[in-house]
Length: 429
Image (cartoon, rainbow, N blue to C red; front, top):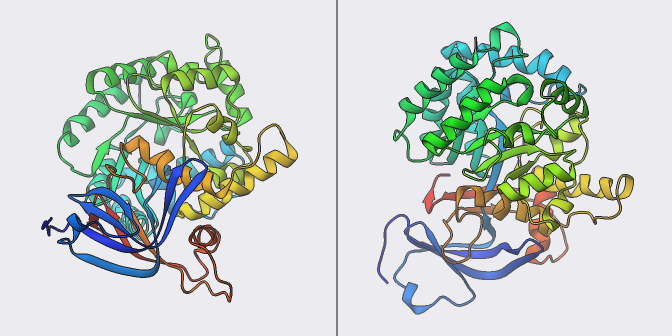
């Protein structure tokens, strides 16, 4: 084989990826092969047919799949690390809504999104599902900036026509839908890496008329959907009052074709999903974005992620900035393990805590599958990869490759460094 394009090469190093939700495939001094942006697999000895490809030697470094953040709010990045002592609804009204209102001004949006996009670029994230704001020009600006990075993302213009401050509320369902159609028309076919996703903020801020209209857009354009579900007990009670016709929060999306089934849907949080809601999500193939740091800081609770995995639901991880304080998906991995232990000890001992293997799976294959064949080095998967230099995390102990990956999840900021970052076989960092 003699292909020598930038998307065909071999990486050598200490390789680790998920063989299953509970098991690593880890190899020391092994080879992972990329041809035309697609993984050809991992090998202890390099097959002869690949000898013509260029080899990049990262011996003694870790090579893992790229991490997928399937729930993050770009306009909230400006106030990350602030107001972590409030609960969800107070936090939205006091900080989030006033901040998002500023994105009507493109100069402000441009400066803020420059910081978000640059930091996302230098983070462990290779793919992300992102909330913007309700402003079409600012949302397009964010998409422009993300496209230039080479990262693969979905970006949503937010819809909200009720129960929102006047400065951040669309005049009517019709106004919101007209703006959304305009946005879809303007971005359709424009980008290679950055795609649109329909984004009802959450049921409390979206009238039934708006939800129905968004469901119609799903059928018309085949776009995916992102929103929030069963994050907070006060929020759930609010939804019961707003939608007395519904039998559970999830039905307020399912009724309008926004929970999945005919399209891909990400619902963030699902901390308090009932048996009925879980059954609806399983039937629809809904993706659950588990955001452990946000659920801690906003006092929402601990989602039963082990149950969701055991029941075969689609689950990935999200940073949920600025509910979460930073973009580190390694922090999301370690937090997922930590909060699952608290749930097991303090709430429900019928489901065991998550293992590091399961948490790593959520960040790679679990969330990656929302984008297609993403999140693994197995043959046929898109080649997203991180090369991690962990030599600065000092220890006298000899560690196995899985132990080093686990350590990196907890100690990435204690000397860890992203040496290279690949998305679909293209080096972006």
